[in-house]
Length: 249
Image 1 (tube, rainbow, N blue to C red):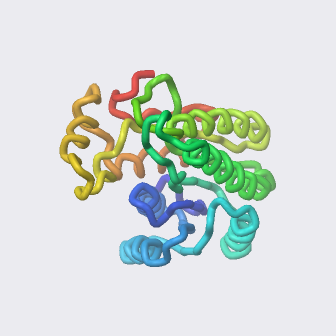
Image 2 (image 1 turned 135 degrees about the vertical axis):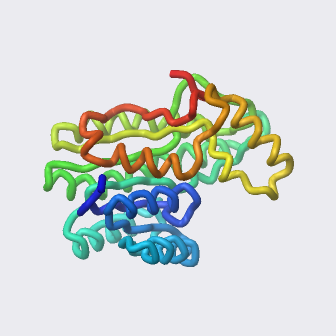
Image 3 (image 1 turned 45 degrees about the vertical axis):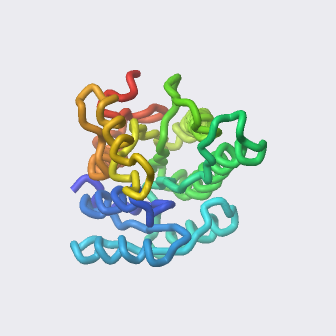
């Protein structure tokens, strides 16, 4: 198993992407700690993991709250002995409208939330990883020149995260800690069928790929498990593009 005896913390663990990653990590032998704000969602994913023989714990944590994150990480280390992987997958509260329609607060909200939560969660995990001389910090989203009208501050938030990823990778690399971003061109399974025109959105995601098929939730989990594993020990300060060619590097 790729992640045998590893301990992974997943913020946003009750979401669709966080849940997929948690299931993949647990399948590969990791003990996963799911953090989020909605107990029922966390418990549902944890119960599913346990029913398949995996190890999963849950905690209600606001990943924007520095003290709450610090207390949570310390509790994980006290319980499990160490932390090997930290993956932040929370939503950023973005308001996706054309820039001219946004208030300053709505524009800045995803940028501020993204930078704050990634800084807070990485800084909480880093000392424990430094003590062991190893660790993996994963981020999700990716940057680059591609964008679309009407995304508000969301794409700008992702660009800011990549600057932060590079800085963390630069400062933590000497301690054996890797920092990697996974980026997709959209995951069709995350589009609710209650969204107007959702079938057209899904078709558009798939048609923009070179492979004419988009990444699925299981794909995100599988790649995340590989990147977090020792098989990917030479990967750091980089993006892993799983967009099926929708984003051309």
